[in-house]
Amino acid sequence: MMVGLLSVGVTRSSILLDGSLVSLDNRSSELISRLRILSDRISGGAYSDENKKNIFLSDAAMLSDVYDSRVIITDRALKIIYDSYGNSTGRRLMSSAALRSFKDKAEIRNKEKDGYVTMAVPVRMYDAEGEIYCGGVVYAMLSAESVYKLENEKAGRSLIILLLFMGVLTAVAVVLSLLLERPLKNVAIQIRQAADFDGGDVSEAGYTETRDIAGAFNSMKNRMKALDDSRQEFVANVSHELKTPMASIKVLADSINMQPDAPLEMYQDFMQDISKEIDREDRIISDLLSLVHMEKGAPALDIKETDINLMLEDMIKRLGPLAKKNDVALVFESIRQVNADVDEIKLSSAFTNLIENGIKYNKRPGMVKVRLDADYREFTLVVSDTGIGIPEEEIRHIFERFYRVDKSHSREIGGTGLGLSIARRTIVLHRGQINVESEPGKGTEFTVKIPLVYNAEVQVKTPKGKNGKKKTKKH
Image (cartoon, rainbow, N blue to C red; front, side, top):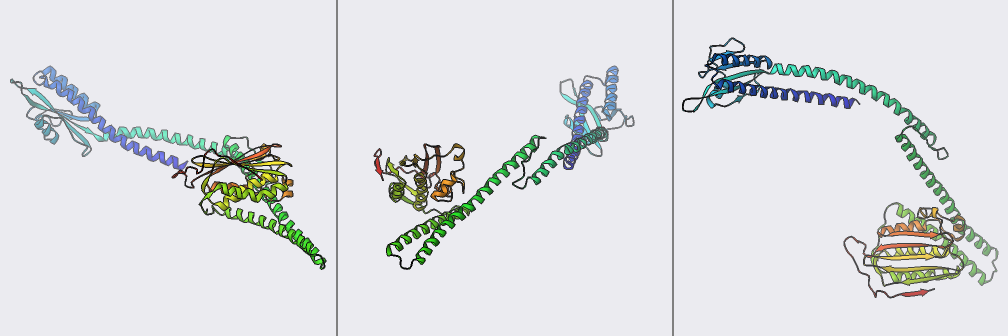
């Protein structure tokens, strides 16, 4: 508030200074206009006509009074015939402005000097041949002090008004600050009380701004609580997932140690089981390392031109045994041959996660269909299944870290809830996008679109192969 009042004061001083200069200029312009009118009257022969002479002398006296100035009238010899101050009548006028006006037959106005603005208007007359000659000068000295005095009086009145305005403004500011401070204090107290996740929400029905602050804090608090809950759940899930393979390995190892004379077939079975548990442990650790790597920043991509059809065929071949085990038909439909600039290892891992989820979260019997197509800019991969589906309210969360829809079922089939989050990040790194549609009990469909050329803004690549050709494989 003090800064605002100081600014008003500085602005006022600047305006008053400029206003004084403008007023002096306007005042001198008005006076020289009146002198011009007076000069025109004298040009009509007022010197020789006593009645007319008295009239213009009266006008000169009036100008002197109205403009608080000294008015002088001379004849053609620059002899003063009228001086409003009355002390130079009969003398010659030696002012530089008057001399220039008389010589050049032009109006002269000099800037303020020694507290006065001087001006002179020639009295133009005509001789017998119609030639113009200077019949005298109407001269005036305008006091700048009188103009400034008038402006100072105005400034005094404006200062009083400004002080009153500042007083009213200060009072209003104090009242408003008191009114605003109360709800803000209430919000601050409630925020301190609600800082713990277990505290209640902040509520403030005072002003729109405080309601917005309370709403924003509640939203942030709820998001932080959800994140904290998901982290705690993640730690619990990971702990469980990491302990389970280790516990199984220990049981199997102890069983072998307790049977030193066990047949070779039993040793082989136990070792196969131990190998599976080690693979499971390795998968969990790999997911955790991938997430940590992505959290630190965008990893570098090893971009190479890749045969997407061949990559998917190899992927489906590897997942065939898992699909058979879960009684799921795995179908690959290729609309056309697709080659794209991608990081084959990272993108293969992301696509594997989508297809593997479709197999694991499916019905028995069920089906997972993988469809590949492309246009001149990007290729499209659609992974659809006939599985359990995802509730509508859960869809927007499935790409969040650590989030799992069916937690009990997820624990049965393994996993940490990181796969979809890692897959989405990988697709985004390829400047692509992933969307999902699902209906509980009927299945889920993931649609992935990725540019054929990594730098898609500069280059465009047309898909290779014979358009329109379909290939269908069933595993």
